[in-house]
Amino acid sequence: MNQTSPEGICIDCAKEQELRNFILFQTEQGVCGYCQTSSQNVSAKQRLPELSNLIKALVRYYYDESSYNRHWGGDDIEHLLMSEDIIFDPHRCCSIDDETFIFIREKLIEPAYPDEDKGVWIYAGFDDGIRLMQNAMINQPSSFYSDLRYKTHMQNHHDLEEDVISWLRGIDDRLSRTIDKGDIFWRSRIGYKDRYIKTSGGLDHTLHYQPFHADSIMPPPPPLASAGRINRPNVSYLYLSTDEDTAIAEVRPHPGHQVSTIQFQTTTTLKVIDFGTAKLSQFSSSDRELNKYHSILDFNRSFSTPVTPEEKGKYLITQLVADCIRRLGYQGISFSSSVGSGENLCLFSPSNASTIDQSASVKTIKSLHYTHENQNSVLNPDDSFYKLK
Image 1 (cartoon, rainbow, N blue to C red):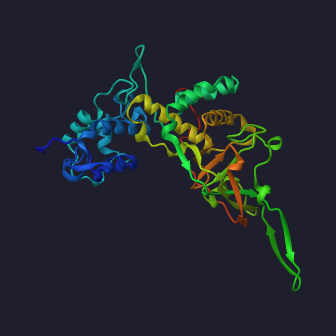
Image 2: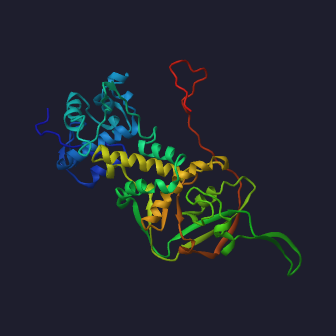
Image 3: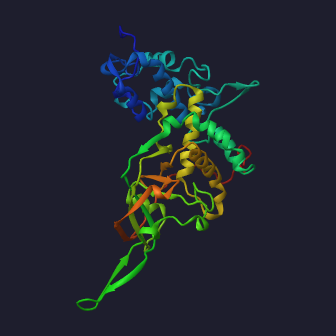
């Protein structure tokens, strides 16, 4: 047994990126509680309470309670963390034994039910004698998001704004970022302005495409603006992307389409809300904070995911949040792209960016690539399944 009581986790045992970042922020010589060996790169012992909350938050993020609660058919949390390979990397560790079990239980998991504003619960507990169960945050929307989505279909948006603004004021300092004057973004539009063939020096039948540029690639004026994921009908916002490929993917072209692309340059310094920048470690200090992060994930997903024209009602919630962000004095919203590798940016005032006409060009789409993942499927659901509406 180690003579020094372990108070942290070494970087070699950490696999999940947020956990690795947490450890690397402040390391010291010590004994790792996971592999029970001495290392130069162990998380600082004075940060053990933060480490405990982060581990529990990661469990909540990745795992349903049924995976680690024997009452729901799973194993216990200690054995889950000793064998899983999302948060930790047991295959790289030289020793995982009873001491690891004790460290996880006594230093990382307890107390299991701290005060809501002082720690993270990994078990749902009981309500009026009924045992509850928590689902992984990545698999289930937050209660705040679900309630708000329901209300947007039942109430006018202006009746909901104060609640959203109150929620935003508790998190906007961790989501805001500055875009410098002169930063470059991209925009695209399916099609081109005109086609030409060259006549000087003899007839040349090679096609030359004139891309949309200047005003022809700007958003339509308010009377012509249709509803988007962030703008309401007859409101003109400017949608941009951080790279050309993402800008092209966002307009959903088909193979054979010609697409005009162009660079935009910001004309002033901008302060925006970035839903894609939130880190779990920023919200892992308590259950209350973790619930905020859960809602941020939902909104980032909503901003990133397009809907079909017949589902435009699903944009009510993102339009509402955008209205409230604008009311708080921000100039735009940044969010992850679901179809490209870059980020998207929506500016509330199109005049805050101008075209760089020399960068305009026309691309022909040659092919598309789709990725997919298997989903749980059931051909003949029996009485153990509940049909969702």
